[in-house]
Length: 235
Image (cartoon, rainbow, N blue to C red; front, side, top):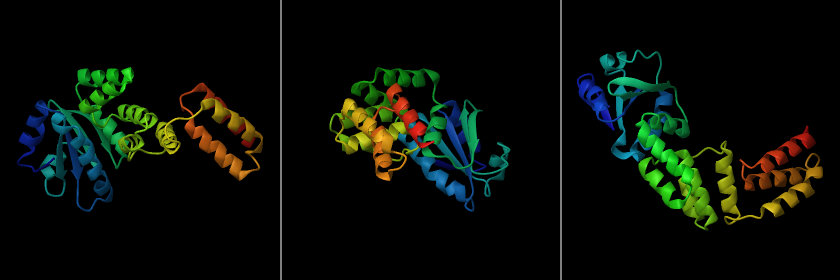
């Protein structure tokens, strides 16, 4: 990470973007959202090592550099590749969105190679993918699930630390870890069936039903069917 001034903008941003993608963070000390976004950018870009550079511009102290981007509000983040803006966003964003933004700046061949390794899905391929792109959410989730199933829950949970519980896959991995990594799908479905008629009137039954759903693969058609059955009983 480097603090960029009007005097160093050409060297640290434009010229540097000819070598690696440069993420430019336009901020100011009085900007509340800037204070929450800054550490996320530091973490996400830092995890990629020297594959991406991070440049921070205090708009109050460096008006010429900030005017290049014609921003109307901050925080504003721009991704430069070969002196051109390749992507941008404004306002504070969650870590997953920031990671997606930064990955979009990587060379296509590298991004495709990472995705291919994730598709293979074995531990060695997933670890290789993360060595190339440490913030790839799909690789982190897939490896976390493998590790949890193998009894290495602590290592697996560390991979998804900070990911939002709004993500069904994240909740699934955490639920599996709480059960020791392995579950009987047939046993879970049998219990779901026994609870179904009680979920509307019985809070405990409904809570247990929802807990069991988290243990099922969120991409499985059976899981979707159980969710539809629950909705039909509740509404």
